[in-house]
Image 1 (spheres, rainbow, N blue to C red):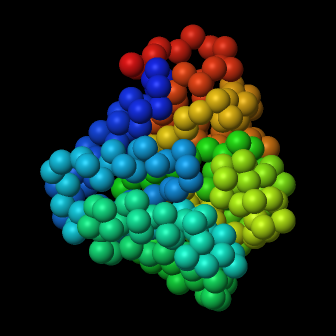
Image 2: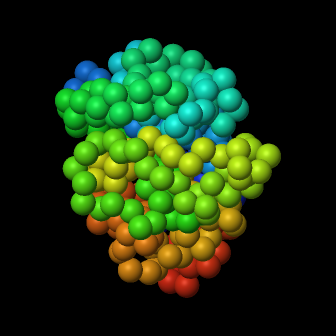
Image 3: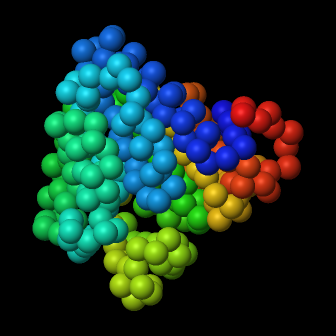
Length: 249
């Protein structure tokens, strides 16, 4: 389901309301909520809004990490661990979380966190969509078949250039060439998925993924096969869509 909002702020707040309701419901039903959290600049407003949602017992939330660079220290501004710790876990008060450490023993991290995430279903996953259509760090052509929960992946030039464009690195030579990433099929195993996709730079990917064929060449197109996925767009990210879509706000 696509939901389009007039601006990034209202889109982020609506997505946070949705996410908070899902977390509360999981805690009510199961006594805990297992979530997956994305980072990236496109997620900042959403994460800020989510940490201010009322009525969530964050001590009952267990969080998993979507992806992380290999070889980037947690102190680097672009580290997704650093972003999650500062913008979600510490702000909300989440104490049970599983970070992907790409500094030391990436293969061991993939195995360890993979075992943890496979131990029980994920209630809700928060994801973004890359400028090249990637889902997590599964760049095109993405592997739609592997059942491994986490993978070591090679990052393509478009993905790495996006990180430069967002201001995380001075030039592409500084961007790591490999990353740890949740697999496509593991993302799809989540009971519910909320994708937060603002900004005009995402418009070509949004069009390819939601008006083109479902294909590894447009990795996030696979979200269309999920029975409970909601994609939050603003006017800018939805600008190239040609189908008649209802604007939510």
